[in-house]
Amino acid sequence: MTDKYCVIGNPIAHSKSPEIHPVFAAETGQDIVYERCLAPVDGFVDTVRRLVAEGYRGANVTVPFKLEAAAIATRLSERGRLAGAVNTLSFENGEIVGDNTDGAGLVTDIVRNAGVSLAGKRILLLGAGGAARGVILPFLEQGPAAIVIANRTRATAEALGAEFAAHAAQAGQVSAIGFDEIAGRFDVVVNATSASLAGDLPPVPASSFGPDTLAVDLMYGKEPTPFMEFAALHGAQVRDGLGMLVEQAAEAFTIWRGVRPGTTSVLVALRDKL
Ligand code: NDP
Image (cartoon, rainbow, N blue to C red):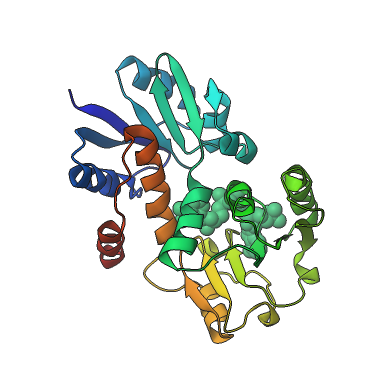
């Protein structure tokens, strides 16, 4: 029997996940269908219950339901629990298992696709919202020298830093500051603010970047974001968030199907269609 999956969101028409998972399935010989599922903004829980009753095996979750997905899960992975947000649900043996694959997707894109190791590196993480929260534990697992969280609202960065301090290998490995306190050059700068959505540049100083810096904007689109243009102007190697998107999908597919798909051809095809 064909196993059913979907991506739940509101809106959902823009989601690229239904273009990704069927390619993974074809490449790995898995018999699945993968659909878009528009849930009413106040109807996420009812939607999940309906999917479970209809025999779906799992779902991805996108804006604005990632926090509700963490709340509805009967079991959470460590990274899902720490992120406080879930983008991957598995329906198995009466349980709703929640995980967050966004951070793992970003790490795979940086380490494998860009070929940049994070071990011993200084990482500047701009933003302290849902996306930033999801990447901190996967970053820590790579053994960086420092993760500096900088946010417009400093208190939000501080709260996030405090939550993850217990997972740091040494005191001071995770720190939190306001944008005006950013100092020195970084090996990796990640724009996890939503500034790019509005075509804005977060107030990061040019001195953060150099020829050995990798700058990643989690947003993606046809054109480089103002952050990518600014980082490139100051010598950094740049990439957008399309690789993260494809890699988080591959991680979710692996959780569901027990087989890891290749990602190169999907990434090229999506890039062509932007
Ligand atoms: P949230 O709304 O949870 O967080 C937004 C963050 O951006 C906050 O830290 C906020 O600061 C900051 N911010 C907003 N506007 C500005 C601005 N003009 N200047 C500086 N900082 C600003 O968003 P998410 O974390 O969910 O998403 C962030 C980005 O990541 C989006 O662009 C999203 O598209 C992308 N993303 C990409 C994924 C992928 O697979 N490629 C997956 C998930 C997200 P404050 O606390 O002060 O409000």
